[in-house]
Length: 533
Ligand SMILES: C[S@@+](CC[C@H](N)C(=O)[O-])C[C@H]1O[C@@H](n2cnc3c(N)ncnc32)[C@H](O)[C@@H]1O
Image (cartoon, rainbow, N blue to C red; front, side, top):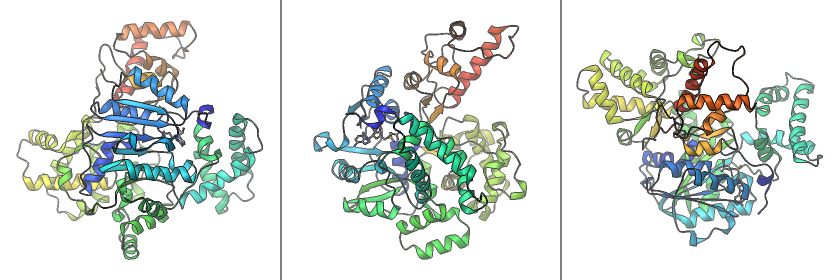
């Protein structure tokens, strides 16, 4: 089947929020018994080249992962990844998702990212009915979509781009002219200080950073049907599905708003659906990732502390600039990575976090919080289970951490999670952080580098590898080559003029300098959880 994606392929991406682990955690927080992720059957609709699904299959080798996509080119790329990573638990099918029927069996997790808004209405209905018919009893479906009110604003760009690009015959010209008309309109609007001029001005940089394939499929394709959150929930209900939650948990709660706003939101919102809809108005939300389950399950909406005691945490101290401490304290420039520190973080948390502010903190509490956050920051990007954190803090502080203190620490983590400042995990991803003698890059990433500059990581995130030097290096990190051998290969690529020299002036000892560069490059992969050996 030939589709527009065969002409302009969509770059393979992983989407952290689609991972069954994230879905299961949200379920856990609402007391819903999500299926075990390790052995789950997982279906991805419109899986593109499979980057997302295959990363899940790679991390959960006991699971069964099936993906379907209408573009044969996407599926061909995915097959390449399956072979490169020798995945025996994954299968990709090049077909229209409308062909799916009950012979496919049931699935514990159904993922549909970046598809729903971009297909005709009858295909949207099919997506709902696949979820209705194929979800296992406690299965969870994930559907993302463009939403209003945010998309009312972006529809303006879409309209202008479609009008102008529609006059062009060839796809490349359509893309170039879609960009050109936005530039022209922004630069020549009659009054750049008017709300219209300001909106154009504020968005031109964002729009100009969009990749060609993204711009084409989002702004120039025929189908793009945003809808309001409440419309999505109503349509799901017509297919016997109910809303479980949003993968961005912090967006579900009004706790992050000032007291007065929160009080009004609560007063006008008899249900969680209304509350979330009103918060979309406040945020001018334009994209949603909603989770659905069968409608006969009863959900308890209060978020208990218990699940946090049995989770893993990943945390990185943050810089003052990342959080609104006090306007006068904000640095002019964003702080560099090195400037992220625990003191700043604790200061910011204590000022911004009601839970901590309300507590009468003793010096011992502060020591424990500091020790726990320092520990997590030091082992980043590794995560630690709550029990490991307690054990290690106990060793660092040379004292027993009492039950009550453990609960307080857990409350701190809960409030950091509600503010989207800490990541939760069910299972520890597998990767190495030290550079070995013969480094190995995740095989999916190695294969991706043969056709694109974005690769998967064990953190189920994407790494942008725009430097040609890193792209060539990454493909060769098979565990067969030592660092000196890799340097020799990179030198050969320079001699063949496939790579340019990385030095502005020739160094005295090129091998030594190349080794420094090589280690730096490898560290980039390691810091993002992409090295597996
Ligand atoms: C915007 S891309 C998203 C790809 C991937 N899910 C992601 O988010 O990175 C949309 C994908 O849906 C696929 N698609 C669109 N309509 C489809 C249909 N009716 N059946 C199967 N796949 C479809 C396209 O081929 C394309 O790969």
